[in-house]
Image (cartoon, rainbow, N blue to C red):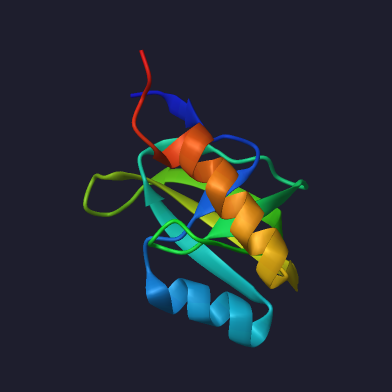
Amino acid sequence: MGFQTEFNSVCKFKNEHELYDLLEYGKTAMLKSGFRVFPTGQKVIAYTPDNRAIAIVKITASIAEINFQGEEVTKVEMDLIRKLTEEEARIQTALAEEMFFGEASS
């Protein structure tokens, strides 16, 4: 048991429905496995399940708990600040691939 700290610039969706809610309604909540610390109050880049940068969001809540099945989970609530332009998305996606999602270099 322990908390894993998320990078302050990464908020990656694993679920298309959660991403749809963000883009359609301007807010969403996503569920992550394990206890995690998200930067509540900060603006971060949101990524699609296939690692494409899509929007700037503000983390409004990060709630870590043990659910009724005994699993450690973290619920992250966020508001949409704005969608990225095509150029911004391309640049952020390339940077994230090198910094967060790509192969670890030795």
